[in-house]
Length: 122
Image (cartoon, rainbow, N blue to C red):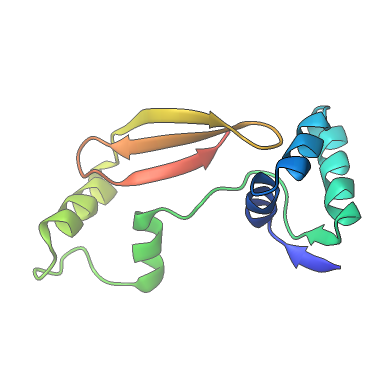
């Protein structure tokens, strides 16, 4: 069985109308729903690597991975604003919500100060 992330599995399902229809037939809540999704993935030859609270990494988190110092004077204005938000905290505003393929919602936020965007699974 091929291992695949939940995000990649949802993208795969969304590209095929027949699979999307089958996925929408899966109903339930909590652990019962997770088990049904894992079984559905297995029936297609996939093993889900992780299932649960999945979200994409934000630009700020990516900068932390790459390293660097907010005190760097050669930063662009956008990076300086993000660094300021790191100190004071972002001022997130909900932009939109989309229903997930299986359950929950994807919420899209934007910081009013620096314009950084993030996506969270709810």
